[in-house]
Length: 528
Image (cartoon, rainbow, N blue to C red; front, side, top):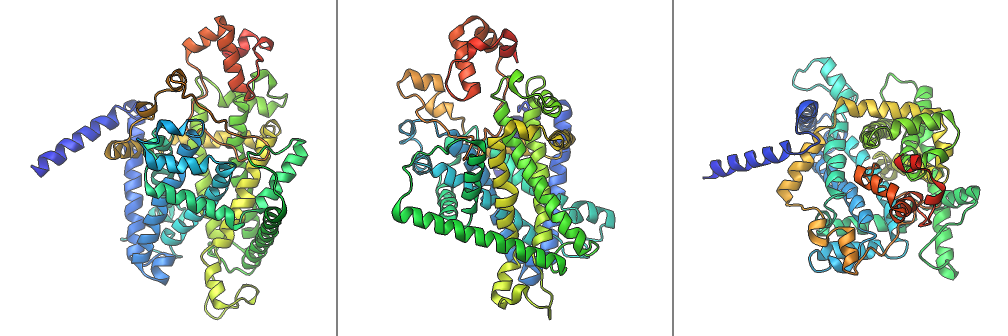
């Protein structure tokens, strides 16, 4: 009976996966099979390394701890990534609609959507992403000269030396899979205590002041843009203002110390970077990778910002026009393709940065700045690099791109990296993420949100319409629709050509200000 039940379940799951339009036929199915095979082989190699004590944590402490850290980090990353899509996506929805059916989701959204808490959550969440990637690196990255099962050196170099195995595991299991389900099954995804706990941790990280240097960058960007920072809370005064500025100063001091300690370790050759790379080159590599991560973080912000701007208002820069033409070609699939390829690029760079910045003091060597052994052990786990990467290599670039999206697109490197990301997505390395998402959705019993709360039109008809508006632009981390399409259905576009009220509504969404600018657009604008 058990075998029959398992076989039936397997057949049902296989049919469910095959019915997914993204992977169900042709080249997509071939890519999905190959991608899943590469993922399975990568996981086997990583587990084998940890069991043999060939990684930092498994070698320095115990293989069991390495397994706990790796599985815990990947599991938490799924909630960090999926939870973001859910909390951002549910912001406009009236919580009373799901208060009884999804009580834990209601608790999370009530907290996250109060005042400026969503911005605070996104700030703390950014550090959690970087920290989990660094943790995966500590648990699963191979030590120098590691061998496994007598495999050829070329296989070891491709999957372990380059970090490909960890990249596939992190992207497919920890990020893309959860993003797919988290943005379409929002209510079910965060209807658990794990989501509530993750939200409180992210809020706690922001409250600690560790990342408050980001607010100084926020103010500088708003000043340069000549626009005020919009808030849902009254201005700080008295003790609250003093507490805020003290945390900003503390964060700025921590940021400076992180940079100084990292540079000292790099010049002294006291990091886990590959021995063949000299100290001077490692310093250059560190700053180059930081800029690449920042560029990719800013690109997603700029792309979604210009998606709401008419084509003839996207500037006169040659590269900005080439980038937009490529990005929004056809039905807009390249935007989703970029997001997937970008994920591969960012995670790859983060793993290399983790290896470059993680401090390693050999026996008999002096500690960084002469600190105590206990504090040096804390530094050795890569927290300094994680803090610096979060603020200088991620948040700051996002803030700049949100304020100056058109100027950001004028950078020729944006077009180059867009091409690279689309090429990475075309390889199908992460195609297996759709398989994992389909399996996860089926096993967990997730359903689309419309099943519980109806569509936006249905909610409006019941006088329970969406009643919140997300803030973005200057002074705020952009709230991204993770896998949202940018192409309207043909029927809707045809209706917009004949009905001025529909046309005005579409234009108000595209411009993000609720104003009627349809009368200034031609029919070509609407079609674009």
